[in-house]
Structures are given as C-alpha cells and as structure tokens.
Image 1 (tube, rainbow, N blue to C red):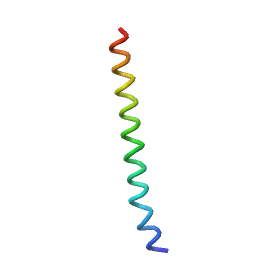
Image 2 (cartoon, rainbow, N blue to C red; image 1 turned 180 degrees about the horizontal axis):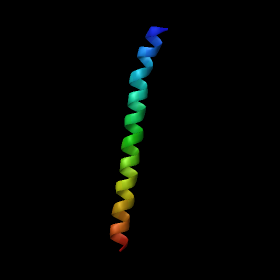
Image 3 (cartoon, one colour; image 1 turned 120 degrees about the horizontal axis):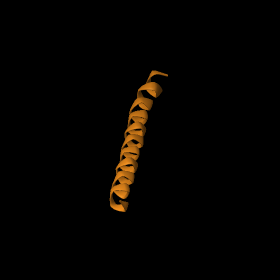
Length: 38
C-alpha cells in the first residue's frame, strides 16, 4: 500500500507540471495572437 502511494506522487507531480506548462503555453499563445491582431 505504501509503495503504491509513493509511486503515485511523482506521476501526479509530472501530470501537474505538464498541465501547468500547457496552460502557460496557451495563455502566452493567446497573448501573442492578441498583440499581433491589434
């Protein structure tokens, strides 16, 4: 049981990292598009 919990923590951290970087990329892309459309 303990091993499964310790195994899940890095997976959650990696998933959170990918989600945050995708969100940041999306926001930057929208900002750049808005700037170039003006």
